[in-house]
Image (cartoon, rainbow over all chains, first blue to last red; front, top):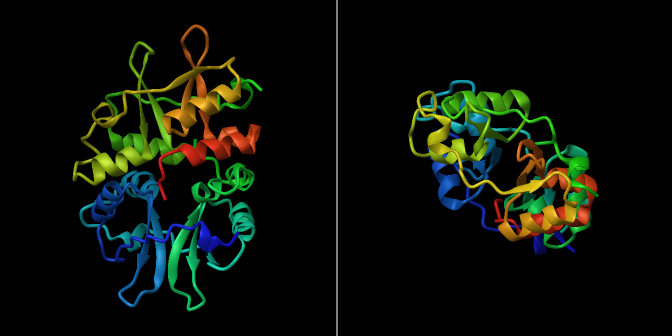
Length: 138
Length: 138
């Protein structure tokens, strides 16, 4: 099965200059756990998760009303292409100990995300292996 | 396989009167995503996650240094006993659309946590089933 058959195509994003509070509001309203950070020109700059906001920014005393997301985002975003097989995506997640990949088309634009949850809808075997390999967060 | 064979038994807890900033810092330091909330007399009264701090404190503009754990913790905790089968735990998680259970011993004391990640170490298929049933958080 191809990644594009399983990925989430509704990609909400946030600007690098938005505040942490704005990012938290957006995640809460949309019931999502992460947001890609995309520049005005459409370049993927990074990703921020609910955990980055609470366990890094708040824990370290950053002020959420004034700190910009670009200050705490993860800049290393792992990607795959939409026409690759989901097994390639699963092995990349396993190798990197992650649970989510940004999905690009061949123009290098972000067209979606593929999470371990998405994988579970197609293969319990692949999803279970990714979870076992992922960094433990209990 | 019994729950006690794959659960995480090292249980760090937090007081209901601790600040959410301290809770965030504790989760950061311990590389965990949630903390059980224990009253002074050792009773399990709630659970707080990194996501709760993001969505209920940061998103709403509250100050994490002043907001206490008991103000934002969840009080509905789903539990299992440590001598039950992991199949029972998986079925409970899937039916409740959750990814984590508090585990009690037969004296009703906390003995650990079982997450979908722990489940993956016992069975990819059970972990995949739980993920597939859980509320989508992309």
